[in-house]
Amino acid sequence: MKENYVYFLDTSLRDGEQTPGVNFNTQDKVQIALQLEAWGIDVIEAGFPVTSQGDFEAVQAIGKAVKKATVAGLARCNKHDIDRCYEALEDVPNRQIHVFIATSPIHREAKLNMTKEEILDSIKEHVAYAREKFDLVQFSPEDATRTEWDYLSEVVETAIQSGASIINIPDTVGYTNPTEYGQLFKHLQDTVPSFDQAIFSSHCHDDLGMATANALAAIENGARRVEGTVNGIGERAGNTALEEVAVALHIRKDFYVMETGIVLSETKQTSDLVSRLAGMPVPRNKAVIGGNAYAHESGIHQDGVLKNPETYEIITPQLVGVSGNDLPLGKLSGRHAFVDRMEQLGFEMSDKEHVNELFKQFKDLADKKKLVTTTDLYALAQGQDISDRARFELERLQVQFLEDGKHIATVSVHDSQKDKMLLNTGEGPGSVEAIYNTINEMLGIEVRLTDYYVDAISKGADSQAQVHVAIETPEGFVFNGTGIDFDVLIASGKAYLHALTFYEGVQHA
Ligand SMILES: CC(=O)SCCNC(=O)CCNC(=O)[C@H](O)C(C)(C)COP(=O)(O)OP(=O)(O)OC[C@H]1O[C@@H](n2cnc3c(N)ncnc32)[C@H](O)[C@@H]1OP(=O)(O)O
Ligand SMILES: CC(C)C(=O)C(=O)O
Ligand SMILES: [Mg+2]
Image (cartoon, rainbow, N blue to C red; front, top):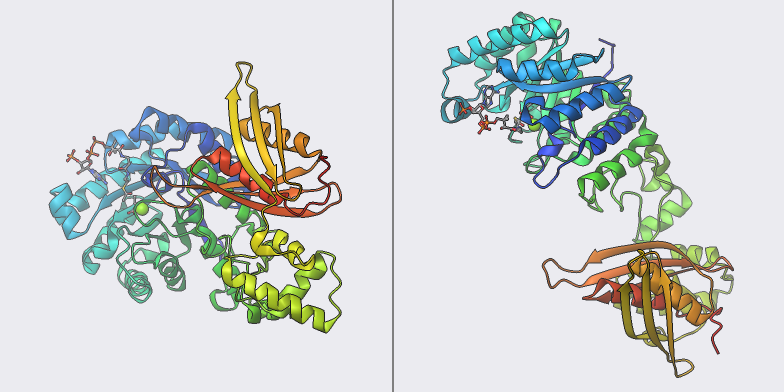
């Protein structure tokens, strides 16, 4: 065991996959495992091989693909589970088994129908059996935090005596709190005679929102291993989010004085991959990797960040692989951020009176809109009436799928500036591309689509799609646009035309 070092076990592929609705295939799992290795994870819990042939094969494939990290498989106190885990990992040099059984009164009585003694006997038998096949055996008393503390000490001592060298203390139902969980680790240290012969590990769930705090409390009280998942995915409210623990240990190393093997600059990439393959977007306000983690909309904060980012940022975005911070403009934004953005867009902002007038107009607009976009700012600077800013109106849109994979779009648009109806037909490899190619040709422009994403405005079958696009003109200007409709293709067309409202390069006669 390295001194002052916290080992990281990632269980995104096992406990993370227990998230309702998440199902990784073998290819996804191998891709995630390789990224976990690049992120510096010490142990990858690859699956629960007895679960299904698919899970068995995924564990095998991960064992083959991963080079540095230890690969672990889960097993109940059941010889067949242990055999399947061994068969899946037989050829993997760095392998580990994770054997578990529940120990709390509710699980003993309601689920397992076993007495305390029967559970101790099962641990002796199955941990010893696992130890015959694996050099590294981890044991978990499931629901440890609702188990009688003295009995838990007996369970842990039995597991160590039977051959476990890693003891994981799961807060299976997210019941504990940092003070209590820390004291539990201290209690084990004081009462388990063989405590020094094992590495102790935390495994927390987030039912009461304390999974990260509990993991850190365990580390403060002797745990040298932490288990969790990327983005905190997992059963119910999820597991400890490992990126939060890794960054907390780094940012507060003055307090924790612990090293980890985590390559922090790989954090965002790891989070993005898991989010994409799990089909679970990361909430914008999520710690460390959420979309707002490095964004400041309030004027006082923006002013501070422009003067020195450390006024309001304890984590440098680049530390975790995020390209930079963001100062979105809204109704709470201040003059400093407004002027800074206008100057970035190339506008001269030295005349105080002009700035005051523009800033007043900006605040009036921001009162009506959630966010003021770059397009709005161009309009402001050019003195245009922002309330009446739709130049192009989508009149009709039809998209057809051709047999060779191409799509053909017919688009008609009203140009209110020239009071003219425009009609064109064009094609593209996808439906949205067909629409945008047709509009480009119709307006005689060569802009590049640099961003496109769709949000649902509300839940349910009748929800409206909100499409956001960003386009870049050959002159290097970026315009954003938003379109809303029940039909995602119509919303896509509207968003594109919205973005083109103030583009001077429109050529059509
Ligand atoms: C806290 C956790 O995250 S634990 C891991 C949870 N993950 C999963 O359950 C995902 C994968 N699970 C599965 O695919 C299936 O549940 C299997 C293959 C493991 C078992 O399937 P089945 O044989 O159909 O049993 P089922 O899931 O209905 O019931 C679980 C059985 O395991 C027993 N059991 C539960 N935990 C343990 C344990 N740690 N050791 C021994 N037996 C256990 C239960 O008492 C029950 O036994 P019973 O059939 O004698 O009543
Ligand atoms: C299998 C065990 C460790 C588990 O995931 C839990 O108890 O939460
Ligand atoms: Mg768990």
